Image (cartoon, rainbow, N blue to C red; front, side):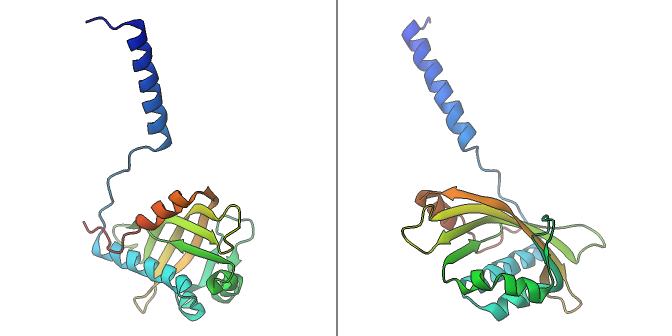
Length: 185
């Protein structure tokens, strides 16, 4: 069967449009499956995010290792629980901006390093002024957790990806992407 020039052109345009759409929104990878220990870190990450959502400065600080470093990739990270809590006081207070995040992956190394974990996922910054432009910004976080002698996981290192402006639809997709239950192995 021979296609007409118009059919070939239509097929080429359709293929190009499909390729462009795929490039803009690649298929989602298969969800991670995590061990019970990795799910402990998952739950702790959600608890950490909830401390900010609840504007609970004491709960926020309780998630921090005493010698933690935030902005770990920066030339001058914020070091120590008290300094981090002070620097984050405005964010935790939530009067001008709301920060939300959730894990999409947590990982613990095999073997003897079972007291260190890595977590990552998306973050959403919302300017609480409804007239703000942009109102939403989406980024990502990466945290390293340490399980102390008391068995509690606390953030040791934290950093993120610079957020970019986001639409209302992207903010809604962020909210819908949150999983409360850890995807178990």
